[in-house]
Each structure stands twice: as structure tokens, then as C-alpha cells.
Image (cartoon, rainbow, N blue to C red; front, top):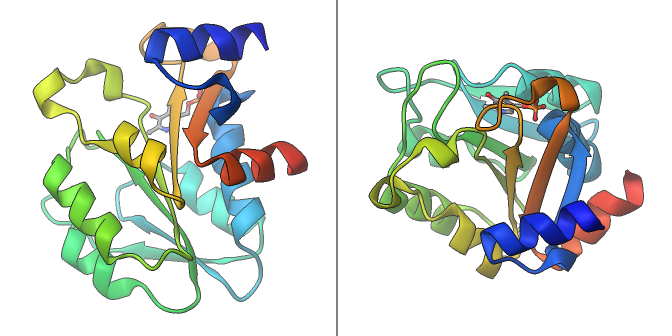
Length: 182
Ligand SMILES: *Cc1c(COP(=O)(O)O)cnc(C)c1O
């Protein structure tokens, strides 16, 4: 609770809309586990973070790797790949390992095209390294949308990977769901 309150203060968020995990890896896995299972699809961009594929397989869902554009997210390809079985879409922005960045306009366009039944997980492991102008609008989406989960980690910006501290924010229903299965 103390950690959630400190994170809330630092990021001008409501502590009740924050969930902490043993690294954001746990939260990425929980998101897949909570919203997808056998017969469902979990989508991510080729050359994305390796945990997305692991999280998809671990919950028994079908991993769907969408072709990149110049090593980054191809927003049109992602939108085109959505089916009625798509449950979770992972997007690291900025991306690891390729360092690409989708703009706020692109992220907004992607979110607007998604059915509300698809959880958009915006992985902000490197968002603290962006200037204000480069931010992708994910915090605002996590605050206002019903289907956006935004994850952050102490591993990169604070160099504390060994401590395993990650956190996520989003709609209260999503936070409650993750807390229940956590
Ligand atoms: C490092 C990293 C994470 C996970 O970090 P944790 O140590 O589990 O918090 C998640 N996503 C991306 C893109 C990363 O680079």
C-alpha cells in the first residue's frame, strides 16, 4: 500500500488504480492469464519483447506475431490482424529490443480501431526516457479507456531489475481482475 501510494503521488494517479507485481513481467503474464486462454489470440509485434510470446503460450492462447514495419509497430497491420478471438494486444512503446517508438497519434488510432473486448497492454518500460513531446498518450488512455492497461517498471529507469518491482494502471475493473488472480 505504501508503494502504491508513493507511485500514485509521483505520477499523479489514484492509488486504487495501481497494481504492483514482481516486475512488470508478472503483470504482463497476469494480463494474458486474466483475459485469454485456449482458443483465444494474443497479439504482439514481431521483434517485440520476448515475454509476450511466453505469456501467450503460458495461458494456452494462440500467439499471433504481426509483421513489423522498419522494426517497429505497423499499426495498420495490427488493426488488420484483429479477429473476434483476439483478447490481448501487447505493445511496448518504446520497444525493446529495437528502440522504435509509435507516436501518440498512432497509439490513439490503434486504440480507436480496437473492439472494447480487446485489452490493449501498453508496456511503458522505457517511457521515462522520453521527452514530454515524445510521450505516446498511454497514461491518458489508461485513465479514460475501459480496455487499456499500462505497465511500468523500476528495472530500467532506476536500474533495480533485481528488486522485481513493476506496476500497472488502468480501469478499476482491470486492476480488480488482476488483483483477484494475483
Ligand atoms: C525490462 C522490460 C520489461 C520487464 O521488466 P521487469 O523487470 O519484469 O519489470 C517489460 N517490458 C519491456 C519492454 C522491458 O524491456
